[in-house]
Structures are given as C-alpha cells and as structure tokens.
Amino acid sequence: MARILILVLVVVGVVWWLRAKRKQGQSPSASDKRPDQTPAPQPMVACHLCGTHLPQKDALHCDGQWYCCTKHRDTFTT
Image 1: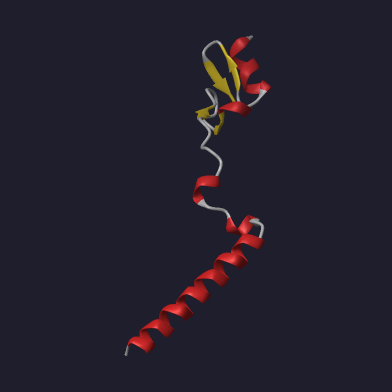
Image 2 (image 1 turned 135 degrees about the vertical axis):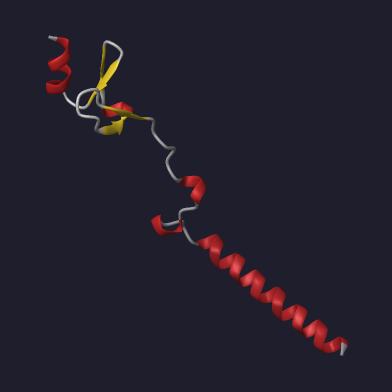
C-alpha cells in the first residue's frame, strides 16, 4: 500500500513540475488576461443639452456643464 501511495505522489509531483515548466515558457496573450489587468473605469458625464453619456475625457467642459460636441456647447454659451 505504501508503494502505491509513493508512486501516486511521484506521478503528481512530475505532472505538477511539467505544468509549471510549460507555463514558465509561455508569454501571456490577450486571451489570458486576468481581471486585474482590465483598464480602470472612466468617469462618465452627461451632455447638458441632449443627455448623452460619454467619458469625461472626451467631453467638453464649459461654465460648469459638460457637452458632447462643440455644437451643443455653443448653443448655451452664445
């Protein structure tokens, strides 16, 4: 019985070692991304005129309001 247990442990150890060795040689691809590698969420704002939500970095800020395009911004600022 002890010989079987030792044999099983040796086989499990070899399999574990081979998997670790194989993973070490592989470079991570786009499909292997982990959740911690996803981009951080961006703050969203709504256009003061039409209500369209867009990322704050793409919006135009004028007089304390956010706008989705120059046409909507110019409607309120002129």
